[in-house]
Image (cartoon, rainbow, N blue to C red; front, side, top):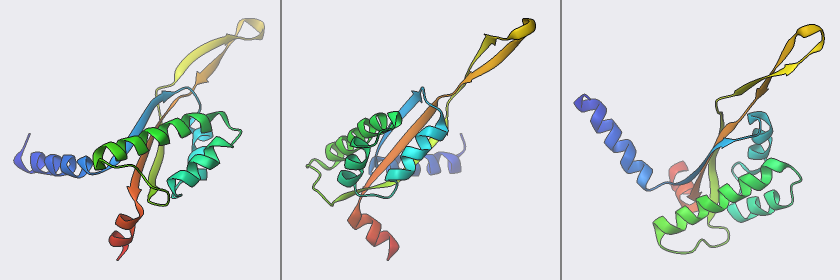
Length: 137
């Protein structure tokens, strides 16, 4: 690895140490369905988002709620204190495609239809509201 590349990688790792995030990989729902849930909570205050997810009737919401609780716990561990109401917000949520499972289903006249079982990866980044204000200014 070149010097410039190594320095930028080390810089990225240092920035990552101060960021609290949680990842959920290989969730067996389609990315489209998970993105609907991610759009509901993107940019919201954490405890408000937990309320939205708790009372949502989508299956993906339960998984997203558990992931958000994990991200908050990671933030609490890094900052060595409990999160207070109105302090944290969801700065970034993104949903990526995971590898598809391809299956065959029998079809009429000796044919086979392909079934694509989709999966996704979800990442939530949590940040304090004070940091958001200082970055904008």
